[in-house]
Each structure stands twice: as C-alpha cells, then as structure tokens.
Length: 319
Image 1 (cartoon, rainbow, N blue to C red):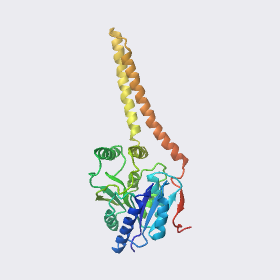
Image 2: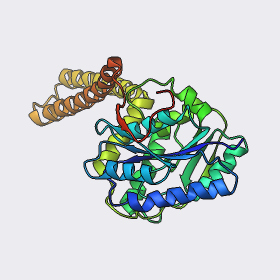
Image 3: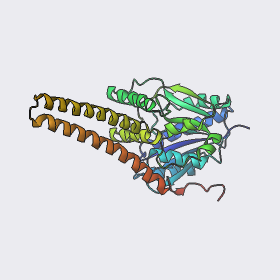
Image 4: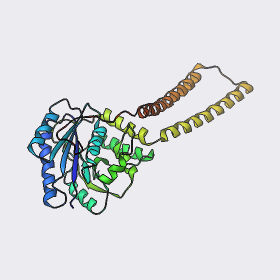
C-alpha cells in the first residue's frame, strides 16, 4: 500500500502568492503519485489562519477545482505555530505522513522527494534543513544562526537551520497529540517525541510574491517563546547571578567596614547611587524573567483550546 501524504500549508493573508504556489504543490503531488511513491488519496491541506484578505475564498475555489485541495479555516488568527498544529491534528487520522511547508514558495518543494524516500527507508521524522543562507542579509543570517546556537545552549533540542519544513508520520503525530501545552514551539517539541529521524538539505529561495509575515518583532517573540517553553535555564542563570551578586555585596560590606575602621572612609553619593542602580536593574530583569514564566503557567492552567476551526471545505470522515 502506498502511503497517503497530506501537505500542511498555513496561510495568513496570502492572496497574492496562493494562486501561484498552489499549482506548484499540486504538480508535486501528481509527480509523486506518478512515481508510485504516494497514494492518489494524498491531499494538500491549507490552513487559513484568520486571514483578512481573500485567502479563504481562494482556498474554497481551489477545493472546488480539484479533489486534491482541501482547506480548514480558523475562527481567528492564532499564529503560525497553532496553524501548523491545527493542520497536523486534522490530518493525523486520515493519512500516513504529513509534510508542513510555508505558502510563500521559499522552501524547495523538490526536497519532498527525498523526504518521502527517507520515510520509505524507515524514518518517522525528516527535517528540512537549509544548506546555506546566501539569500539572507547579514543581519538576518547572524540573528538566525545565533538563535539556533542560543536555543541549544539553553538546553532546547532544535535542529540547526531547521524551521517548520518537515515530514512527520502519523505514528509520531498520534504520540505528539498527547502534548497538551498551550505555548507551543514545534521545531523544539517534535524532537522530544523521539523515533528515527534524519535531515534533508535544500537551498531556500526568495519569496515568490507578497510580503513576509515574520518581521523582527515576531521573530524575537518566537525565539523567546521557544526558550521559555522548552528550557528552565534562564531561571538557573538568575539563581547563579543572584549568588554572584550576593557574594560581591558581602565582599563590599567587608571592604567598607575595613575602610571605616582604618579611618579612610570618604563620603560620596556617586558610588552609592551606582550600586543602587545596578542592584535595582538586576532585580527588575530577574523579576521580568520570572514574570514571563509565571505568565506561561497562567496560560497553561487555563487549558484553553489552541485553535478553533470555524469552517472546512469538506466534511470530516467521522462527521
């Protein structure tokens, strides 16, 4: 039996690029079917993440044109990670493998061939990894590579230069469904499931049309979410910092006593002000980090749904 593949594509305001890339994805499905690598029951599943333009209308039109197109619509914008998760959970019971990929055409879809081959060889997870970053600006390349190094240093298991282009089998998704946290960072959570995995390397291209939906602000937010969701090392760092400052403060107290006893004390407000500002700044930073973790706990204990599907282009098989 040939495996059924679902290509999961999150979409947010993609009306300019969707008419172009949708044909590319369909051609890839047909190519893999003709090569007897996947079943013709394979599908392209678009996940509309609360778009404000005609993205959902275009998805519905595509679904009417060809049976290989399907779509689900979230009730509101919940972010890229939740959109990918919604697609994976929608597909896990009706397919054998999924491949998540962005809609903008930057990721090389020909890498899917190698991903499917790796699955046939026994791999349950196949990571799409960028072989180089020649198309990025120096700032983007420096910050992106620094992010992966920082994540690994913090103790989070992430694959270097891997984003969200990956093949995941339904067997892995069934286990991943047991991960119930609200604050999700898929590129760090998928490796936690385990199973046999490998990587496929490819070159990333320029965006075909439209504008990027990941400015610096969102990238920093994603990075911070990844660190606080997967690592408690910042809390350990605060503890170490506190011990170090306490030791320095104790030494300063001893020094001040010695100076006072020897009669060399000089009254001055500058040193005192500097010390107070330094200690106050460190305390505020530490309180801020602690607040972020408390905020994560606050969101987790509510157990709110991570996504809500408001519409589909087709009925679920169990409906």
